[in-house]
Image: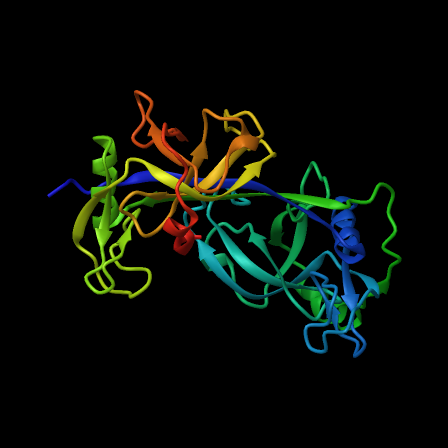
Length: 321
């Protein structure tokens, strides 16, 4: 039996979004130590603000300013903060209804221990020292001992109309997305990866439809039947379809433009995708016969190049388009 393979895998990318007038005003307000919400037609004040009423789907833009103190409505203790979380010491995730708002805002609550946190406790915003127009401009919430005046304050607190106008408004938001996990390929792909290390390409045949799937998935994608019979395919194949890539990916040392193609390996009934090299991007064509190019330290083909043989007839690969 081959050894079980595992490997750390990180999926990370920056996500940039444009902000509409409501979210732009909200984030710019945080930069200016001002918390804005929106008022719905029936008088509810929503914080954080949204652009459409979650009940009626009506567009809402009536901005209002609410307080920087509020009440914890519910919470959960986080005993072991992770990297990039708001605080590096144990804290509570809390829903806080700010004075003047009808909904609660989720953020970190800095407290000495879980016993110090309770539903109904009064808190206030601790602003970040450096603010740039993001939810992290609120560093966290902290306990606020205003119990003597809390009842009167919350009873009279209102949401003051606000124009939403600020100098140099925030118009875009950049959010780095990142997922760290350990990938375990499973039985079928483990055998596939071990074969690639020996520069062989293995597929698995479905016992029902008899199609050969590459890369193998442990089950037929057509029938859903478990697969176990191994079949060596390729190494040559046929370009079934392709696209020209004109945007250079960050961290990828490949000059643009280049071609990424679906390749039907000989003996396989499912096309895999790979880069085409050794030929000008505008000379790649459907039906072109290709072969893998391996580098000395690679566990899989670096790319595919044209094979010294005629193009395949359309009828031989039309079912794999």
